[in-house]
Amino acid sequence: MVQKVVIAQECPFAESSLTIDTTTITANLADGGPGAVAGQGIGGGLYNNGGRVTLTKKVKIFGNTASTSNPNTFGL
Image 1: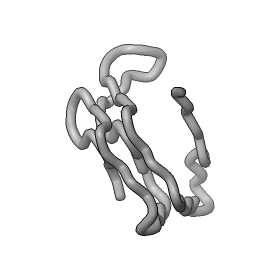
Image 2: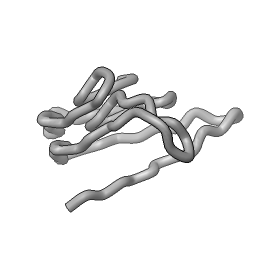
Image 3: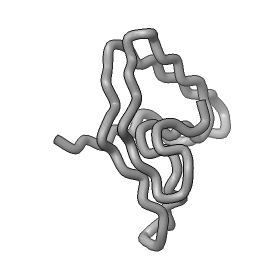
Image 4: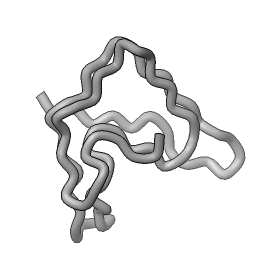
């Protein structure tokens, strides 16, 4: 099952935060290239563009792919 979750949009006035607990993030793909917004192809499992992300010890991130770099996480 493929699921895309958008947690928060960028906001110039407040910092967003996210806590992830008891989750496995695997078999995702970040594919860079042209599109409505050209993808960078980084952070296939989890991409953080700002804000605070907290991962508990019960979170597993592995087996993801990115066409440019950082296949599992970026920006943590």
